[in-house]
Structure formats: structure tokens, C-alpha cells
Length: 199
Image (cartoon, rainbow, N blue to C red; front, side, top):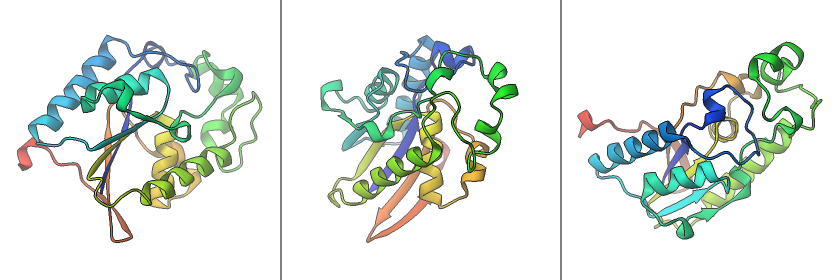
């Protein structure tokens, strides 16, 4: 199986540097264009998907629909890859938060939620369980698109790479950026997503 983990396209709240989290914000026109460009790149490489799993938030579902071409009703929704909830911080500017709640970004391993945010431990646990269930999928599933969000993607990658929680926010995750992993015979490895020039 080849797993394609991808973050959703841009939203207005992304553009305005607002916490989104569990708030269900739709894609903006730029986000839809980013998803269309991702579809075009994959199509040019001859990459299609046999299965699509998405966060239930609309920005993720729409991105998955555009990238994969799957009808929305055929996309499998999974709450475990929903975005990290930022509680009462949602809708607030990043810049205002960093001064008072800087530990949220700087010290995730020891940060204690102050505004009803989802604890990092809970986010790490639910994404780890998702990965374990993914490994149990039928071996003939082929290419699987996993559509998620910025913080949730970082949690998935931290689990997949077995990296330190301290480095959580050092992982760069752009809108519609792919991370690719192969799972074969019980072995997991990260593989480079090919570019058109390599084909």
C-alpha cells in the first residue's frame, strides 16, 4: 500500500492567520485552485487512488473530492484525522496568542491546555490508532489518500517517523502538500513523492 497524506487547501482563516481547529471553515478560491493543481500533478504522473479517507470537516472533504475525483459520498470519514481542537482560541489571531500562550507552539511536550484546547497526548493517541488501523487494511488497497489538516498532519508524521514531540511545530506542512509512505510486508518507509520530471 502507498499512503498519500495531504493537507487541505487554503481557507479564509488560513489566509488571515486565525486558529481554525475544529471550526468547520470551507475552502476559499485559492484553496480550490491548489487542490485542482494537485489533481493535475498527480494525473500527469498517472497516480490515482483506490481509497480515500478524510477528516469530516468540509475543507478536508472538498479537497479530497477535488484531488481524488471521488464522489463525496464515497469518501470515508474518520474523526481521528480531524484537526486538533484549539478550544476558545479558534477564530483568534496567531500573533495575539503567541505572546500569552507561546508554550502551545514552543513546548508541546509539556504544554498544559489553558483555553480548552485538545491535549497533545490525545491528538497523538488518536492519530496513532488511525495509523494502526490503516496497517490492518487489505494489502491490495493500492494507493490510499488520507486527507487531513496542519496540526493533525504533524501528529501523524511525528508518529510515523517516531520523532520527538518537541519538534512537532518544526515540521513544515503547506496547503495541499503531500507526504508519501509505503507499507509492505509489515515494514513502513517514507518515500519521496515523484515529480513530473522524474517520469
